[in-house]
Length: 339
View (cartoon, rainbow, N blue to C red):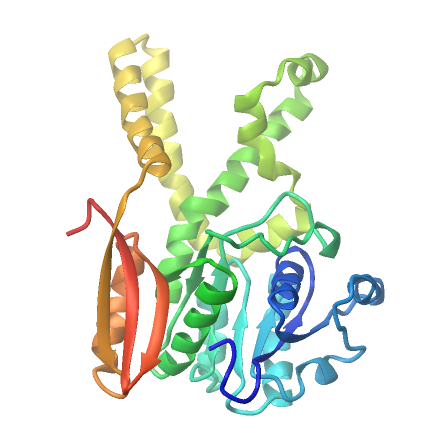
């Protein structure tokens, strides 16, 4: 995927903030032919100062590229996708790095782009923003969701190989709507909770004393509250229905904890925390087993798509994707608790 027999992969990154910038820096560090573009002139200058090629115009950045990564604020991605698609050849692979997927996937489908656009979401980041916070190693070992479409498996295979080989990330294949439901609880609601805790501290009459005594639990629980506010608002608004549904489940569990505390029911409180602790322990010590699965490169596309999407929902991921001799072979990893 990375290098063909005669020509290296040519890539572009449009929108070079924290995530897009980290993609750009990693592609450059890997020795690929990559060009970046950002609407902010100062960001373009900063990229060039680090030795990374940057174009002055978006159309020049994406011209004659094999793959283009789309970054930038979530509300800008549909228009960026249309502009980049119009400026690239039909065999140019397109993907994005936004934190919600269903709306953009539907937008791409309505415009006949799903054969070459693969919605993506690298599950990595920091509470800082901009190219100055970007890190070329940000995605190593991270989950990177890719959402294959029925007519886009060839594009998915190319992108999965690139993500595993160059970024050393774990590819998690999912349907776009399932992604949004999962990240609502795994990522978006934690931003709400962090904001609520930090906001309550900010409003407290004992604010300064609270911050003086704030230890690891407060720091860990409020870390993402330091994310740029507009970025968080875009993320939450872009996945509103799923976030509210997930929040209802969190609120119900919180009500059980509060009810047990209010009633002085130590046994119920202990039981609820034991239940919560099981998830925390599973997160820290998940073991996986490896499976290798092959499909005909040109046949059983429905079966391949169903297997890929099922893998992601089951908590699995891909560490490799190879296409040769008319077959595609995936190296998959599933939690030991799964089948």
